Length: 378
Ligand SMILES: Nc1nc2c(ncn2[C@@H]2O[C@H](COP(=O)(O)OP(=O)(O)OP(=O)(O)O)[C@@H](O)[C@H]2O)c(=O)[nH]1
Ligand SMILES: [Mg+2]
Image (cartoon, rainbow, N blue to C red; front, side, top):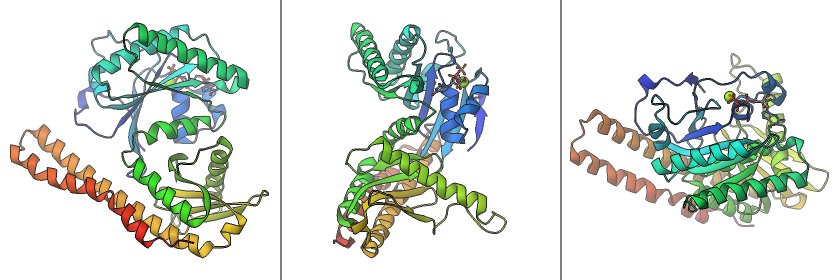
């Protein structure tokens, strides 16, 4: 990951990775969120963060699936400042996260949210608008629900008054002091993964044929889950998965072979099994260099570990195929945009690359079909 301050002069208007913007009033918690989720900063350390005074841009490219840019904004951005090219910013944006400090009076935050969302929507109606009702650690459960209801109503009333009721705001209750911030970020990122339905489908097939109750596909570094099967997610299960990943990575980092000794904290052989005291088993296995599958299953189902491992092997191959298709598509897109921007591309070169892209999209359904045929059914 590289962190750099935004340099307007070197900005190239090439559509890159999807952009996630962190916006909101000063001290609402934007930089803390970024540091805790992507830099493993402990929540207490965020007390010493300085106020952001420039846009900070960071690349998060762990795997082909989890690849985006996060732009952390200073609290008070001025849309009327002529040096602030908000049209360019919003044009390449996939998600706009607006952070509201729930422990503070939020009247000003709501009017800023309205201004930001309406501006952004005019430039790019495709943006996902995500509102983090943040710092809820200080609130009781009832107060959380009440705040969410109130903010939801007021924000939507403002939009309706402006005739913009078609704008959809997704609300999340978040805090850096528990797993809620990771869960919310997971959902934001998932919406930016075009292969999500394919991944969910693969997970559904895998669990139903292996006697597994719940499975998550995790990005191990950020602990964002990029997909899960279609059964509902409960917070406790998600927290257990995060803790399990921490245990595996932390023990490897502390006691494992160092890089000089050709060791990696997470590699092809990484796996863990934990028998919980409620006859449930947690099973973690490496899928790719950056992804792990974490499953929950009953002890009796785990007796058929051979079957699970065989199905997992098929699942892993299928994921690899989806992954390869995505890499191919990204390469094509990059090539296309490079040609477009260098203005050297003759008209027919666009046509020449289209069939490749078409083929890629079609073949992205292939792993599922293959997978269905090869999977062992209990
Ligand atoms: N209680 C609580 N405090 C938080 C949480 N998240 C952030 N904070 C605190 O809020 C303060 C402001 O955090 P920052 O991350 O600097 O806020 P910011 O939005 O980046 O502020 P600017 O850069 O000035 O716009 C810090 O003291 C954090 O410790 C949270 O979830 N709960
Ligand atoms: Mg900041």
